[in-house]
Image (tube, helix red, strand yellow):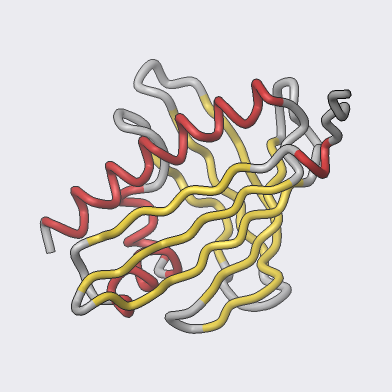
Length: 151
């Protein structure tokens, strides 16, 4: 008998190794200017309205497609443990997932001068949402890799 999938069951886990020190990778996630250089899938640009990476701090980002379409996202940081872990809520402002609060946890592990990121994106509302976020995060990680290589 198959179990029906619930929102709580629908999550995405990704792991990626970046060829940069853990402190450098963590800073890329928590420094407003550095984040703007890589956030979003390839071809997108990030316009950061609000960004306060501390527990309880808010963020609001507009990811703009190459065609100029805005994709607003906001949330709050639940945990900021330097060089170790970030936990933040994730809420799209428009589209099919508008208003649905998801949770993103990013863990940073040092690996002999490199860094492994484990990203867990939880509370996705559907399998289609999981696939879309997998594509988005994969593209963002490619952009982060490019930015880290340029430093």
